[in-house]
Length: 473
Image 1 (cartoon, rainbow, N blue to C red):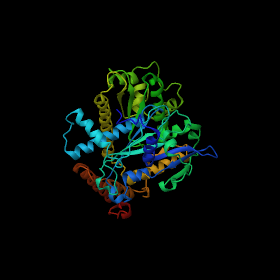
Image 2: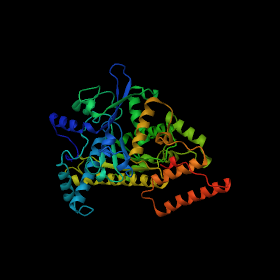
Image 3: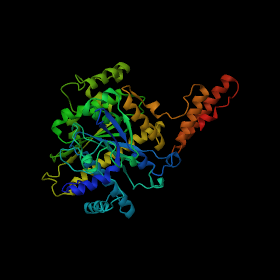
Image 4: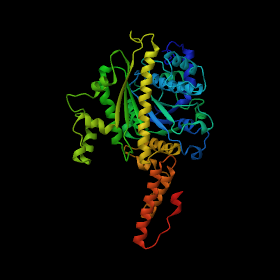
């Protein structure tokens, strides 16, 4: 599957690919050379992907991005999988452009589309999938699944899908391949042209060497993502790896409140040699009966369970591992990618490609479910809202060990309602800000709520008060 991986390339070729891919950097944490303290470096990647024309909310008010984050230990194969997901998105664009029916008629047609997609340099940004034991990605890189980015948002879909590829965990401070081939930060020449902002990380939780930096990535990505993809390569280490992702989720939830919805977790077992494996077997292996409760003697998980049980009713208390899974994630899916060196799939790219397509279908389904939940609850972030939320989240995690309040992080410059009239006006503003795409029943509901509220207010006061109009705009 050389069209997905970058194996077999010499150093000049790898250097060229990493330099081309460098603008994909979204944020990274690096120790200060003088003080050894961690420092967050932010790039203007989100705006470049979602509002390249810098139109503000005028053209993107009806665009609602979703973020899927890929995390896991070094050498698990995250960049390879992200690259495959983006390539399949490119294939879908070519299929639509060329009027090829879906599903694609045969595997040969699909492979031809993949080859054609890779012949379009400069239109798409793809991760460099090198393999080996050295981390590839420097920090967190962000990509968009869809048409190539232009200065006009008219070609941007209403629901852009963003894929975040996170630097591998448990790798120590060894330079990543991206640093080695394309350069790091530290004020190097050219960085000033990439709109870099840097912030000191003062929160104690993340000031503990590389472990603290890994924790910063995991918690922040959990907070801002709709779907978390945990990539693991060795199924025998699931007794260690799976509790790890549970601890990251529990730690993130301990550090947040007023969060609008749960997260979907997708566990991907990469380079699996068992040709008889299937998603149900993986589910049984990972979520099956355990000898003990997973949170026992695990500090973060135990703290999460204790706090949750102390603040909920008896019917919702966590008493089993299954209860724990349900509180940390809205749903959990399992996929596997077979080892290309396995005799069953060697020299059969269509077999391996089929597994990648299965994973892409799971991700699209999970993102769609999360989007539907947000739509029904009227808690949707357009480009401007999400940009504001990301800025607040970065700043919060840098300076505070206190939990992130989602309400305050997403609240813009509108005054907090303090009276009945202001609550009604705020409801109108929020409801009609999300009016586009609402069903007739939802629109009628908004009108009924406002009418009933005004009627109650009139009966109480004997006259209709003028609502503060500045709340509605």
